[in-house]
Length: 218
Ligand SMILES: [Ca+2]
Ligand SMILES: [Ca+2]
Ligand SMILES: [Ca+2]
Image (cartoon, rainbow, N blue to C red):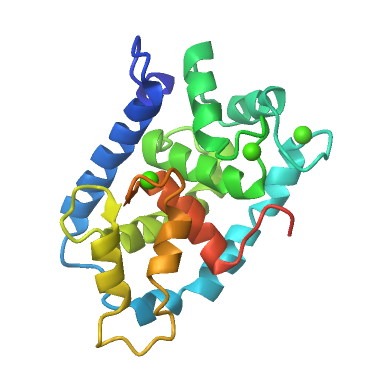
């Protein structure tokens, strides 16, 4: 399973993880095309309270693996977590994963980054149907992440796996929307961490978590 986490022997691994995620999302998009319940921004905003509640239940899991209770999961603590999930990564894959999820570069995974981590594991290393005992809790989480992918796909008009500012503003300012969530430009810029004019899934996820009101300290 670990081998699916990253390309082997590729030094530009961050790009590589990103590509794998894009591929996976494209696949999910194909499988569910036309079935999405999410037609408007309003229908998405209505999901926020539910998503927030569900994501908050992950706090317990986070605290369990933050063994020294310093508010973040350091590499040695992450290793125990992956061991528990029976995910076997090479040192290189492990480093890639850690760096990918440590968005603020603090050398520790705070709670909001932990959610990104779980989503990544869900997307790239979905547990097989056998051997479920340690992953039972994970299946419930999976449903939440599938919903978040659905939201991403909703914004991703041309289906290239990235959001650009024009698409996002168009979506958020659609005159059919009654929602007060017409914030668009600011919201987009907030999500676009590296300010390159595009929002990748990782950036989206991290911004989205903030948007629905989960933060690292809460
Ligand atoms: Ca810690
Ligand atoms: Ca961090
Ligand atoms: Ca970006």
